[in-house]
Amino acid sequence: MNTITIERSPKVLVIEADQTLAEQLSSDLKEAGYEPIIANDASAVLHQAHQLHPSLIVVDRMLGGESGLELCSQLRKAGYRVPLLILMARDTIEERVACLEAGADDYFLKPYRSQDFLRLVRLYLQPDCKTTEYLRFSDLVLDLSTRRAFRNGRTIDLTMKEFELLKYLMEHPREVLSREQILENVWGYDFMGESNVIEVYIRYLRLKIESEGEKRLIQTVRGVGYVLREA
Image (tube, helix red, strand yellow):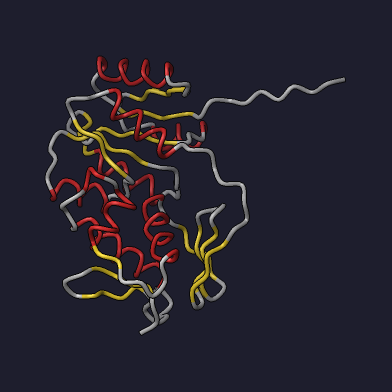
């Protein structure tokens, strides 16, 4: 008797108060082969995320007067490590940094454009790497399959962008990388010309990989960028 395995579409949880926009997001996701789950307010999102196990979560920056940033922070504090995308109306450095500090991996802008949104979704929902490859530098190890880091016997959970940044640094050990190189290879063209996001994420990575008082591995090269090396 043959067994047929049914491969399910990745679930995308969308928190959007605007009904028209929610329907557009849902339609675009379905057409692209994903399974959309629409929530109109933040109150039941934690429960839905726990019950439905989405592969990606999309949050509007403003939710009927409530901040989508606060919801992102709550999701991260609750332990959800799936990619988080924020839909926001203003493209300023302050808004970008606020989104990153809330735990979001990326953002896309209003007015909503289907092509830009789906490009981001595809980027973050690429098939997981099934290899068991590791990157190692000094006492820091990065597991490419689980997207987790390890140092001195402890596990370090990383967001998608933290993983991509650390991976890029560990792929170029002892090589001074300019801010422009990091922006192009980790964030892409959307962030070109702006380096503030790098400082935010370097700070997060240092806090995580140095939380037990370990020596610093990510060094700042003033006026240039960063390098992974022992001081």
